[in-house]
Length: 132
Image 1 (cartoon, rainbow, N blue to C red):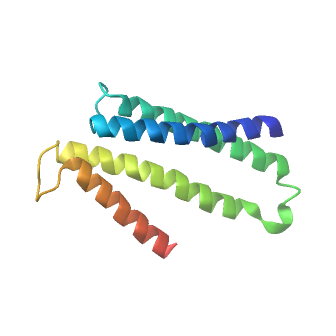
Image 2 (image 1 turned 60 degrees about the vertical axis):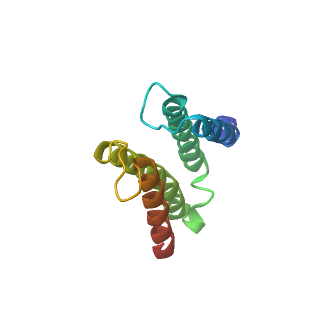
């Protein structure tokens, strides 16, 4: 079981840098997140599925070692850290979706939807990390 947990987590560690580089190259060519005609849409889904498998591996790992680590109560710490990673990812997806739906790639006050979503996500993460 521990080997399966390691594989589930390490696939994310190996896949994430590759998808990040591909996303940077694709964004340099054409910035698009929600258009299925561009590779960014599919890369987002690949990353999402990879996060799901990594999270599943971490939960399985916790269930295997929870009795050995009971004295330090790791579940609350596990939920905090995984919650931050998971929720900031989905927060970014939601902000991007709202920006593309509301602004619909038009210029508003000098910002387009992509610029606004990046700035909103960065601002919210700064606030959340300050309060956390």
